[in-house]
Length: 187
Image (cartoon, rainbow, N blue to C red; front, side):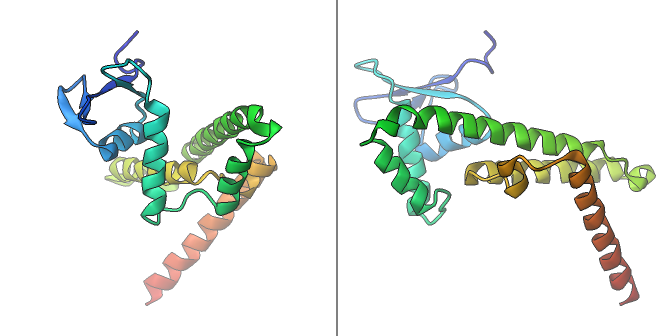
């Protein structure tokens, strides 16, 4: 198994300090959140007992972000999660959430592919490649934010998004952008 495929092993010492076994240094919860945002899988274990503490620390990261006002989870979702712990829905909720997030990731991937497949008349302009890479990096970071918000927009949620509809919407946006550029050039 390659290093990228293996989870990053974080050990928790008795002092509750977290130790990154790859870089041989101590890390914070924010460091762990950064690893996850970069696409790394992490596994946090207690050094003494060997218990897997990953779930506990991931929940703590979410709680800290929520307490700082970075509200991603609506109150009704949190309420439903609490209810699911005391009802027969408990067994269904994890599978439903996993399937929902998988669909969201697939939808984001397809959207990124659609954006990159449209021919661009500016492609022959000097420096366009660098500009396009920056734009793709921006879109990727924006999509990561959408993924953490738990919503992919109305088209993806309802399954109504079609390539033709997406293309029409993109053409409408391009027209609006051209109109704005025209107005700006007149100023």
